[in-house]
Image 1 (spheres, rainbow, N blue to C red):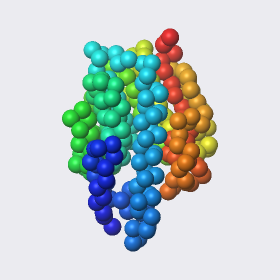
Image 2 (cartoon, helix red, strand yellow):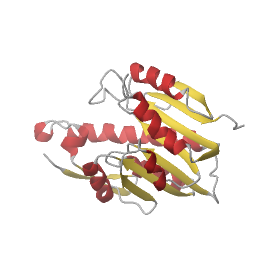
Image 3 (tube, helix red, strand yellow):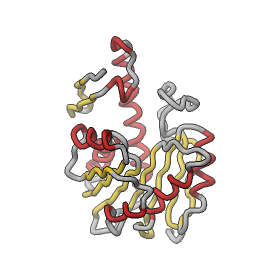
Image 4 (tube, rainbow, N blue to C red):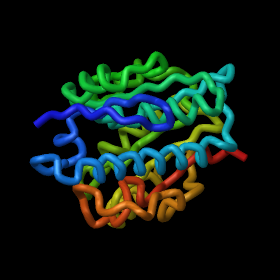
Length: 235
């Protein structure tokens, strides 16, 4: 089932499509308003997290902030990234990559943005570096479905982007539950030229949210736990 809902958020008209697929709205639209409001709360929480991560880290390359978003899925992060960077008055380049062609095609339509390039490719393949500029400021990996046996794939995805970073670069990884959180810490502790600078329950999560629609052992939101890294020579 596909629905298109228009609503106003801070005087900006936004489009939300594929509500049943993306948000898990039950048949008959029961609870639709509540679901949309909770989804907006999740976006607000992510924007606050971005503000927290970026506040003390200016962009490196002629005031152009470069963000690589790994596993971007349907591109819903794009609107949040644009909102935060716009309020900061920063020029930016956002490279969003996913290997799901259907999701990327949807993102190009639903979340088109002049600063964003959507890439349909496998971010774990070394050839993906051809899409990346030489100076990446922030690598985003939001709620990967990481488990014992596939952690090396996520490690390679981040590693290829990390090879194009500089002394003030950061990685932000957020996950749903404690099992994924422990595995992320163990996996990315071995990332070369990096160190973990923040880890634990996300202090900027929205505690009013109810359980997410999948991987449901997290009480609040997709960004329940976070692991944040930077270059090990960064002051």
